[in-house]
Length: 290
Image 1 (cartoon, helix red, strand yellow):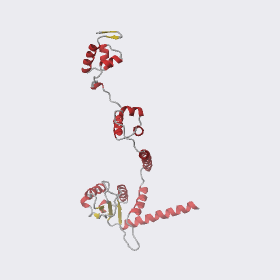
Image 2: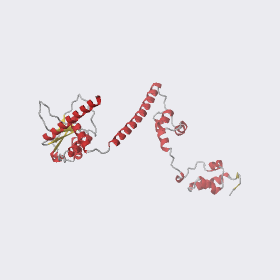
Image 3: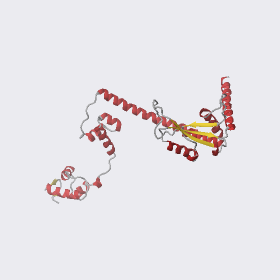
Image 4: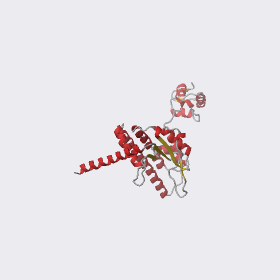
């Protein structure tokens, strides 16, 4: 080898060897050991301008952060804003984006608005996380319902959402209308508990004319387990141009109407059960007050 300890002779010849080894796919360490060059400064000079082989490139955990930082910088974000968004140091951000043009200075009022909006978005995210945790914990506490619990729940559910008999309009029939799939599922489970056969049910859809009527009919058909062809005619609601509708989009499926044939006796049981619940609550309340 054309060099002695601590002193490298014929640098250009040594560089040619280093470049040849680099282009052959050797790593820095392999070249260092092959040429016995243990001085990093000399090794850097020998390999200057030569890209490392692909196999030596290790994935950088910060690559995604760097790319995102550059993207935000090009959108005009400041170092402070990027730091809050990505949670990395300003020194890293500066290193990643130093070749990019500096964003134009924003009006202080606009910066304050942006900062305020960012803080509010962060606050909303925290609130949503807490909201979901509360809901999950409450759902877990319910556990399995007893038949009595389901019966009482169904009575209250029907009395809140179902059709009711009036002194001036005697209609002792059972009809339930709702847009919430969960409510429909509970109502059907309650009817099963009461021994109401599915063959006694008649279903139909009520929906706005601007919605996907066929998709809604199929959705409710699948949920109830009744063939779509067995549904009664869908009721279409006409659009009022003065009204701004909010229940739009693919999640809007209108309401499902469920009627029970020969339901007069069932209706009387429901009404009687409801008044039994009311009387029980009154007696319990009175006992608590005395």
